[in-house]
Image: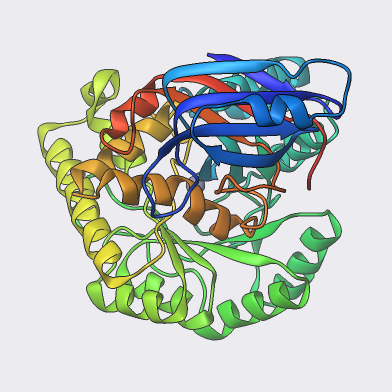
Length: 410
Ligand SMILES: [Zn+2]
């Protein structure tokens, strides 16, 4: 994989066997003319002459030939935790105070993320503010990585699940906590509406942490500060509370009902189902730590999730792709393709999977004006993969080039 950083004065003509522009239309052979980190023009066919002649600079425009490759918009992971490494939960937390080590680890994970073609990630928070700090390091060019949208601390109720994600709050502190995060420059809010899903009892989830009134107060305050709300909610009661409070996306949503999906479709609330943090537990080396009973519970849980993904699509719910990368068993970068292959297992077509990984992710992040599609005037966040992912999504495992503008666009 080669990473191509597109500088302000740089021009490039990409000649690809297929270009998929991030729309429901299939890919076509064509050329993409890039200048100063932006897509300037796209044309069907394969004759580069018009661009080579119309360029007014003295330097000849370099042409990058990509035979048997498909160029697609860069991918978006809607749910990661940059503070965690996906391998060792307690060691990752110990590193939070060992800065040199932490930055080395984060640097490697950001590289892995870019190498999979992921050009933007939405962080789900941590108590130490690492996600927010990494966002600033990337935005100022001190770390090379995808665009990072961060939430700082996640909001959760004092004494309930989520102490590694932020300090617990009493009901009287909710508005103050939202205001404080807004002042820190977060991109969105993360609220923990439920606990986590049990691996030993099928369908068991830690119950709701907030009342409807408290959640509505959080969402209202977030709106007044211009912030979207991503809600960690599993168990149908928690999902319903979050939907009624008007959050922007349901994260995880294990055991949500078809009725809740209907409400989500009607209200334009997106779903980021994060299958791999559950399915990954019974794969590879992780499987050995569970009993036969737990393996059965985990397997039933992720299979149910996969069935609901197909239903959600049919009902018109906006599906994003989120890996929960950093959670134990999900490494930054690699988890993304695994999640997409689980969407394939759900019965989604390559087109639906590609749209979820690009266009829908951009909408969920609120960056639909710059990510998710290849269009003239947009920043050139592009990925070239060998083969044709429109026919077989496993082609996304063969990322050849990742293109990204070096200038900051956020
Ligand atoms: Zn998470």
